[in-house]
Length: 378
Picture 1 (cartoon, rainbow, N blue to C red):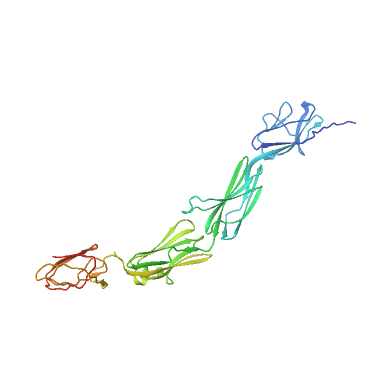
Picture 2 (cartoon, helix red, strand yellow; picture 1 turned 135 degrees about the vertical axis):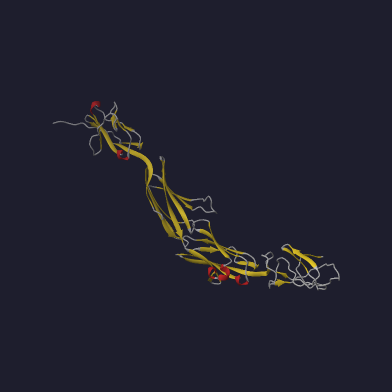
């Protein structure tokens, strides 16, 4: 018969090394140095050669070069009949995000569920960063941040905005480094419409601008209505209007209606309406007619039917003595003398123009004419 003597170390050994580096596993078995063998638990003997992945030094220690995750496991050595306890080799490696929820859409006020799975050693810390899309009002948004420790993480949160694109970044980090991946969440809903002034006063002949702020994702269409009819279908307005859209971001807009040379029929209630697949929203603006007329409109030709008579003082010279004259003026344009005797040369002027002529009437009557005119008869 024969006997075999096998001795074991009392304590197993744990060795950690970084991926891509080299490690030396000590052989702590006692025996014949010329009979050193290394093996992996439940595997065949490791073949060692110079300048290969596995090499032996003079003491029988095993050097493993260019470590990979496949090198992780249990090792043991033997010297003759003596076998060492297991050596557990653990490979440390950079975090890797293995799975992240893909881009998706969600209706406002609903919870968003997102999952980020990672691997790494040491175990990575998972950090979520949620940031609203940049706009003109928010050049440097402050992100909301949540953190979890573990190799897998799921969050269930409401988004920090509505009608917006939200960017979500998952970061896995350990002492060796980090890995990050991002997704986009589109927060959708019924449009929101607002106007700064619900009542606007303007005079006939003036220029009007209506502005309507729209917050909508997605945005399908929008229009302006007056007393229930689209302004583009009102011929009297269509000829004098402009419609513009000022885009601040993918979800924020200013819808603008401009009407020049206001007419009596232009006054009333205007509606700004925005539509998408979730519904529509409306805001009203009432355009009221102010007293008087525009102070500096475009001049109208002499003979206009719309005239206004105002009084002032007139000085004259000539023979026979002139006592009276009659004047009228069209709105507030260049002055026009409509009734004047012959035999008089005159000049009438204001900030908008000048009117002069030579007539032959001897007597005339002053009734009324425009206020603040500079008039010189000679």
